[in-house]
Amino acid sequence: MPSLDTPQTSTTNKTLGHPLNTWYAAAWDHEVTANALFSRTVAGRPVVLYRTDAGRPVALADACWHRLAPLSRGKRVGSDEVQCPYHGLRFNSAGRCTQMPAQSTINPSATVPSFPVVERHRFLWVWLGDPTRADPQTVPDMHQMDSPDWAGDGSNLSVDANYQLLLDNLMDLTHEEFVHSSSIGQAELSESDFEVTHDERTVTVSRWMLDIDPPPFWLKNMRDKFPGFTGRVDRWQIIRFEAPSTIRIDVGVAKAGTGAPQGDRSQGVNGYVMNTITPRTDRSCHYFWAFMRNYRLESQLITTQLKEGVTNVFGEDDIMLAAQQAAIDANPDHEFYSLNIDAGGMWVRRLIERMLAAESPAAAGA
Image 1 (cartoon, rainbow, N blue to C red):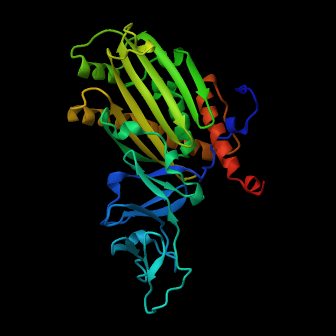
Image 2: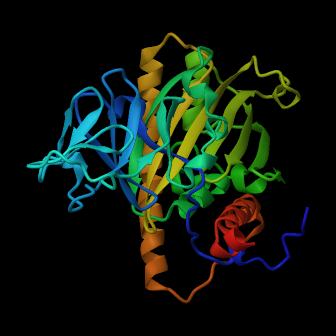
Image 3: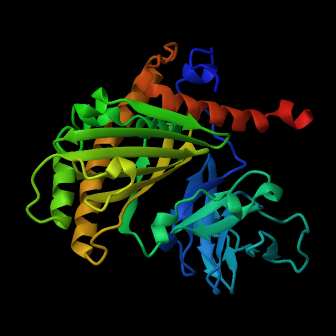
């Protein structure tokens, strides 16, 4: 593993571009229906999403071939078509024009881009890059989202910051001590050791805090499973990044000294913070998240309480990230400096830079 002291532009760049040969979550499954058109900008590209009458999701460029009118302002017609709101041109799910006004001959060039789309883990994923490389097997692993062994729910935030800043935020959770002091923050986050590992596609940051007092969020969760619980706990955070922008965080606490670090979590509560971030512009992103748990699966009350609690926590991040983006814009010549706690985020940046380099004109001409 190369030394972190090796000069890398990724460690000083404040934000990075976004690769296109990858899957990005464009919407929750329930946001896209067969009866309406849904618009969302993904990696700088306006996309219109809908379902065919058979329920298959479709993703087309949100601009008519004729005069670039947004198709999302039109309407669903036929079994799988959309009609432009301006002059009535119709396009099927493959993006090919099927009807033009006042003429029977259809120009064979009349098409709009149709993007590969996969429905998995409660999200619709789109691929905006080379469609011949769109392998559904490379959709990020978020299997806890639809596993019968886990229960939970989530939402999405529109964040006014580059997606890289949110990845930095999630790869270093010591910020919880300062940004989330009333819920999940505690001093042991900054005082504990951590381990960083990586391969060609993933980065993992592992941190254990042994024999500590549980912060309010985790004390409440322990009492949901063990009513009346008091005492100290062993706490863990295992952050797993999958390129370019999905992070699952294995989190939890267990009664101190009952074997959680060795693998026995039966005396604790375990959750997964599911995060996948989709660039919208170079200064904004869509943040899809959920909190899944593997205890008290029957309780809708706990699901709702956890969703509300995490919504409040992520709202604090949203404010901080927007302020950070504004400061970046106000200080264009300032480079980032990195601390030991940034080790995971630095490897994330390196993996993304490798993806960007692979898509560069130089790589294409090699």
